[in-house]
Image (cartoon, rainbow, N blue to C red):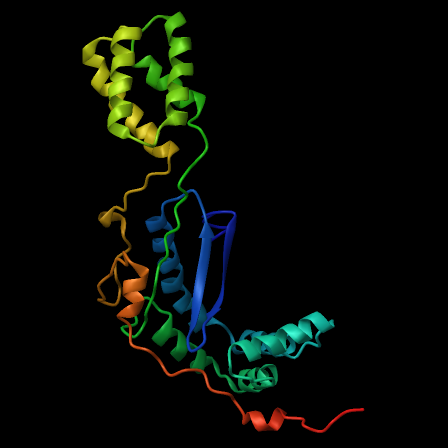
Length: 272
């Protein structure tokens, strides 16, 4: 997704863990549209089913060994050790031997286990798969380029002297835009008509071009339903408008419970 499709400079994936849930996430920072990025992630996951199926047993075992070594790697300093223990205290599982247990479970994994897991929880075509897509769109962008302003000025059909001043004035108007579009457009029309003496037949075209540049400059994004990636498992996409209301409608899962009796960690003897 990063090196071949060049979706963006920041492209990574990893586990997203909660108190009682686990997920696998992709995070991409890009200039491309959110819908396009989501569709490429879906395409990658659909194609990865074949990649996982065709991996050799030797390569699979090699990946397992690497993961076991990583989980059992000796902590380098006190900060890493305290961080690992504190995470277990905060998540209320108190599972201080999780790394050793993970390594033991990985050793028992088979290729068919991984394929079954992928097909059920990750493959876009799985009816049991659940996904949430978060679109984070910048509310402001850099100023519109001089070239784009020049293209707009060319449509006004004015003299070279006035064109130079018009480019400066329009750039200033765009920099200040984004508060009251109706008032800004009215002021723009008056400016084009009375100060630049632009023909009325060209003003409407210029205003529409200015609107497009203003939206781009201010990061205005409208989600296009036609650009949404198709659902491969028959599920219907739901737009979450209010996060609080959405969470309030979800069923609560069982809370976290300690992996062991906390009495095992008690040390009540006094120390001198």
